[in-house]
Image 1 (cartoon, one colour):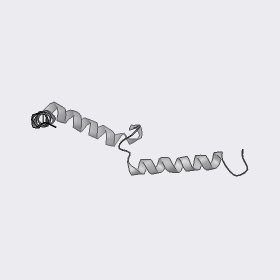
Image 2: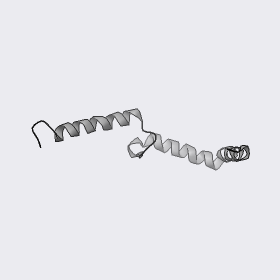
Image 3: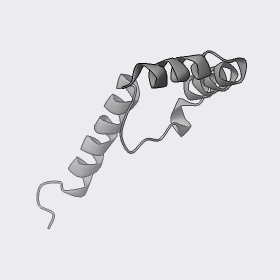
Image 4: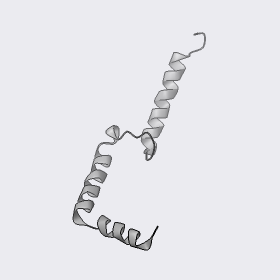
Length: 68
């Protein structure tokens, strides 16, 4: 990336309005983890583990031995 582009981005990210939006978004992600749905990207380990355990139980119940 060109140095002048990088410096321009750094300057923009350091501004008050950008920082305020960033902090608000960070707070919302932490406060409302159940609503934090991603198709890819950050998923907290605990949330991911819980989804996998739920999936495993669902599949075991649905496809229990002796069912078509």
